[in-house]
Image (cartoon, rainbow, N blue to C red):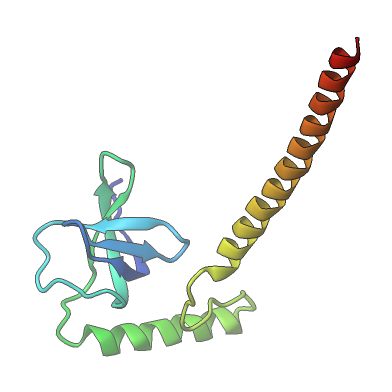
Length: 138
């Protein structure tokens, strides 16, 4: 990758010695080592994709110094949102909410699966009891 790509992103995790950044497009990247000052969880700004880690994740670094980065990033985000709206492209929400919708879909799928397993298990128990009673009669 010769040309470095700049994307907006948000710091989502700063634990375990790695800082993870969710980039626009839902890719999760890792902040490269040696970045000072370290951004905090919730920081939103521009990040430059500098390469790929061994696990395939993007390695990113802040695109600009963090002196006044919060204000500059907010301006840039608003500008991009307005430009997308004027071009007729769908815009991303200004503040991204936690992804509870996908969790509830997965939870409902699991609950449905558990109901089907319970139903199947009760049918198997009935058939087994029927076979055992037929064997006892014979």
